[in-house]
Length: 221
Image (cartoon, rainbow, N blue to C red; front, side, top):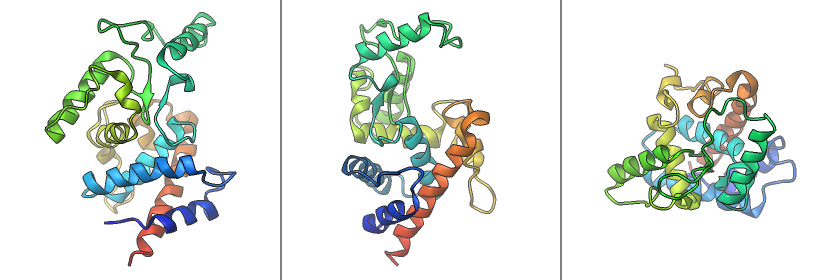
């Protein structure tokens, strides 16, 4: 399975105005091409609706940048920690019981990072263990959290994490219908429990990407 990149981006340019009001930038194309490359080489046995779901979620999580980011879109982890501490002090992070942006036992700052953001050391360690098991080689996420900012590593974390259910107690297969479609709205719960607030927008994102993927496959027929 190979997605024709020209047809894929042409569809997004012509039909993805809500996601790309100024057109698809070169940076966004690079980010999407990396994700498609990783998918085609390592995850192509899974349903294409899984890819559409992942791309829609990653678009939201990266603020449309489509490349790995740090939490609060900070330049580095120290800046991210400062921004989170300020928000916490102002009462805007009421759901946080224990600040996770303080240096942990490794001396690193485990703020969110990636296309689907990892927080807390336990999640960086878990992702490292699962990827090392899947590919029989180390990725270095436990020793250097900034490895999650490598576009290829981040794509693996996003795809494998959503397929296997690393982030919350559900996975993409839980939302696959018998007719082969996927409940994109409900599948937001794979990443975050805010479906009631943004589920409709996530669904629209995923449907846009699904249509672009299908356009890319038709041009390869």
